[in-house]
Image 1 (cartoon, rainbow, N blue to C red):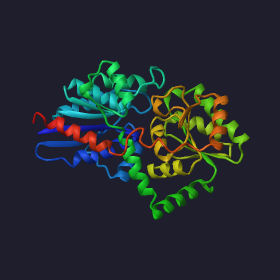
Image 2: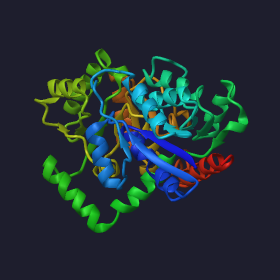
Image 3: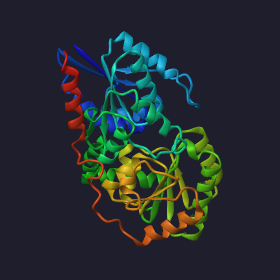
Length: 372
């Protein structure tokens, strides 16, 4: 029996790993077992997505420290690996959960399958701490699933053997394609639209979608980004700014301080995944510091004004994603450009064709069963 554990703990990990988990679980039998561990790094968001996607978490961890970066997960994951005699793990991306999972698996001598390997900005401080986390996971992992050929080349340059790298695309594309198909059903779309209109009390026209939450922006950059949005909202009074606020205490406190008196900036609670996708479909463009939104923009075909100084997804840089950092000059420049320009519809397959999860699952299962 080969025992595989998928380790996840944040909203992006659940979204991206959902189709991989579904495919792996289809292969559960008397010689292969796939279980899912949720660390509760994003506690409320995890339960919301579990309900929407109907993902059952076999194991969970209770988190003691919520407001700072802590490696308490390492010991807890290690204990689970020992208790359930886990042979291999699957980790994803650049989160604290993924990093702790990789370290725990390495200490347990479990094989590590790393999805979304090879993303780099080349700067340890941007994004921080994610860039460092990626490096740690990469050099502990045994098998790498790179979204693009460019990611594969980066891994080879860092000394990873070619035979251990597979270019598969990113499974987030699988999720967003199936989810858009779901929300495009007439009755579902109407239900979501009614919900948004009721919560936000406006007509779903002429708005920009905003998401800012990265730790590297906390402090002066975050405040400058908020100031930029306030200035733009006064200059472009016909445009609303819809801002689903991340549950991080700093983000909630700062956005409330800057926008509570601005009627053109509408703060809302974190939107469930289908509602957020619908907002992406309806908005004029997106202001964000998110990594996943850059990938999702290729499917909804929306421009992204990136509130960061660097991107680890150069494949769509200056095509769909434009770097604004916290510069008001760049914010205004791209804001005006996006309002009068439509994206070219040709980037759908940059990060995968919707079949990534099947490819990844097949490779994982074959490698797990090789020595059973």
